[in-house]
Amino acid sequence: MKTIAIIFVAALCAAVGETFLSYGMRRIGGIDWREPARWLGWFGTIITSPSIIAGTALLACFFFLYLISLSQADLSFVMPLTAFSYIFAAFMARAFLKEEISWLRWSGIVIIIVGITLIAMGSGNTAPAPSHSAKAENAAASGPQ
Image 1 (cartoon, rainbow, N blue to C red):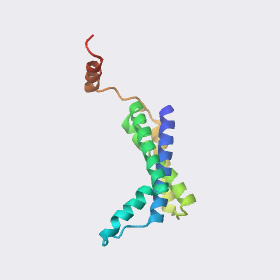
Image 2: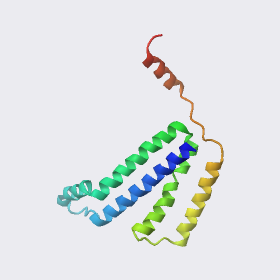
Image 3: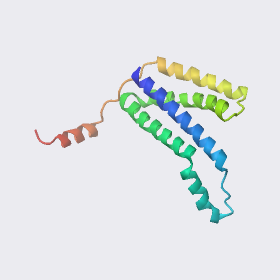
Image 4: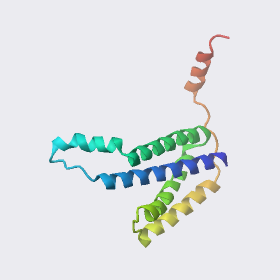
């Protein structure tokens, strides 16, 4: 259950982070590839944008929480549960970015929810066994006994 909570928070971080990135990039606008002289200014605007910085920080949080989850459970369990982020992102896009979401997309979200439920109910939330090389590295690190 702890792993599911970590993945849930990680997925929330990913969705909020992506929402910040989308908001920031909509405000900044696209790059004009025909004007190389303006590229540097465009990139400078991106890396100094508070929305882009916040989005990047939240995606970094997602990454580290994802790593923690992988240390506690199987990849075949953790990876599909990160699909929570698609659900959160749809609701945030609708609420904060005022995006229209078609019935077809909502149908897809329902299918994702069903898939997440099936995976969460199934067994497989086992911590991966350390590999042979990891055991050898730990033995080497501890020195002669």
